[in-house]
Image (cartoon, rainbow over all chains, first blue to last red; front, side):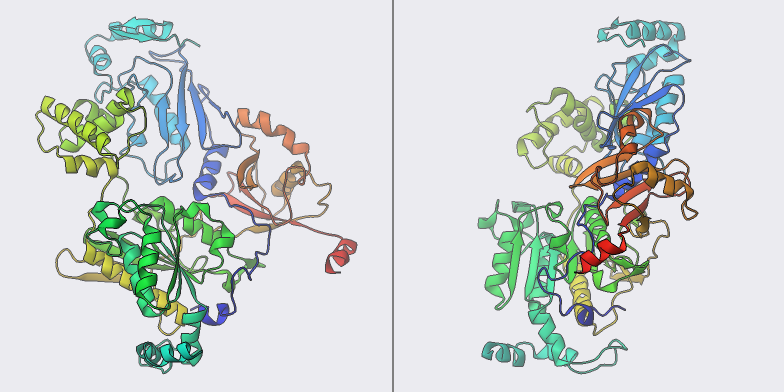
Amino acid sequence: MIKLFSLKQQKKDGEASPKTANQKKASAAQLRIAKDINELNLPKTCTTEFPDPDDLLNFKLIICPDEGFYRTGRFVFSFKVGPNYPHEPPKVKCETQVYHPNIDQQGNVCLNILREDWKPVLTINSIVYGLQYLFLEPNPEDPLNKEAADVLTTNRRLFEQNVQKAMRGGFVGGTYFDRCLK
Amino acid sequence: MSEKLETLSNRWNNLRKILERPGPFSHPDFEPSLEIINFLMNTCKILVIGAGGLGCELLKDLALMGFRDIHVIDMDTIEISNLNRQFLFRHKDIGFPKAEVAAKFVNSRVKGCQVTAYFKKIQDFDANFYRQFHIIVCGLDSIVARRWINGMLISMLNYNDDVLDQSSIIPLIDGGTEGFKGNARVILPGMTACVECTLDLYPPQVTYPLCTIANTPRLPEHCIEYVKVVQWPKENPWGTALDGDDPHHINWVHEKSLERAQQFNITGVTYRLVQGVVKNIIPAVASTNAVIAAICATEVFKLATSCYVPLNNFLVFNDVDGIYTYTYESEKKENCLACSQIPQTVVIKDPEEAKLKDLIQILQEDSRYQMRSPGLITTIDGKNRTLYISSIKSIEERTRENLNKTLSELGLKEGCEVAVSDITSPNTVIIRLHFQTTDVEMKKLIN
């Protein structure tokens, strides 16, 4: 047991001075993200962009799938890592408009590990692989864009054409998509 | 002097019975003395974080226990829904800062007690502020805030040759309640399990799969969550973020949620539920707060006086059905991100000349580290700085020039800490730079 009384009775205002330079410490979230970033092992279809290299909590991930419906496309995701990381997952948004059953027009992404299945043992790398997988295997079972999901289940060819149309820039159904070919 | 004698002889008689004579349950090393009550009343300085449900109870308990120098931080103002249990506040106080109103109330009610209020966030203060306190006790409702103060107290620890200097420890007593359940714990930063060690104990926030709330809602909560995460950002009726304290916002979400619920034949969307989902409201029970705060205040007293054995170290309380308590020792996590981080000293032999690449070379070649491709970050003047990370191309390109800068050009001084991550270690490691000065300089410093 520590004896506070004997250790500290002499302690008065401002008397105890720090031994070292009074430096603000990196938070646990920062220490963890530094580890995640340093060990990012990106698939060759992915790159990251850090607008401010001193800020590891906000960055972009660019995915250029090399197979599947979305090959030749270029999709940008923004990552915002909060102070409660890794207790809470980062906030990930798709900044590119995409015709995809699991991504809506506001950029919300339906990926289980980004919400209900997030666990602190997961890393930024897990999310990168999860996102890449969404482009290889769009999942019509859990749709966010229900129309796209319906097309994918009923007519794969039409779905493929729609994806191409959207990536070249233009209307699919009533929705306009910006060009996002790489 | 006369007032002091008077208070000592009358009002604090009960305390003197505990502190001036041994008892069957007192701590084996306890030495009864007149000095202890003197310390309690004239020297001991306590910080209470939070002046809400637990905070009001804590302030009352500590003031009536004899602590006379109490400080309280709270960033909130009083709302009408607080008044049923936050008994230091009255209807006329609505809208005023909790910390200030609570301090004023205790100061006028408990003679001789001086409560100092700070209407601020804990993050507004630095180590120099927190260092003045003997014990810190928290009644918080946020994990972020708990992690922050925990990290702060751990960063204030001093180590001499890897041995913890006990006088740099500020004990942290943390209470928490949720409805009829509560917990209280004693943390001796650096010695016992900290908030970060037991982070898994906090329940994750309730979330629903995005696709469910978008397409196949089944619960009223799904409808509200949909309006919150999809409709609000899309329509943004007031052009701001959703504010759970703004009745207009809640009304809007309520209406839209009802519409959506109707579409899917879901019942049960009420104004209160909307508030609950949007603000993540946890029902508060006054009696739970009273019990947990009393336990926390007792622990403050035990630590301040050393008269009894403190709680070791985690108590859970539940009075849903009868009363249940259980105390166990939560264990320190070996690779805790916060408290296992004993800064390792790296000696820099030629501080004037040493460059960042020399430091990296030490980390790679020194037998203690043998790292592969360390990434280095630090904080300089309160700002995060990435010194060098080789694995990310965009960062590498922009930090490469740092390699040839000297440590002082980069703003790194004697005693500065650098966080280093590498695949050879499961966690980010903290190193502390020690600039070795030559004998001549040393003499200059002494003189």
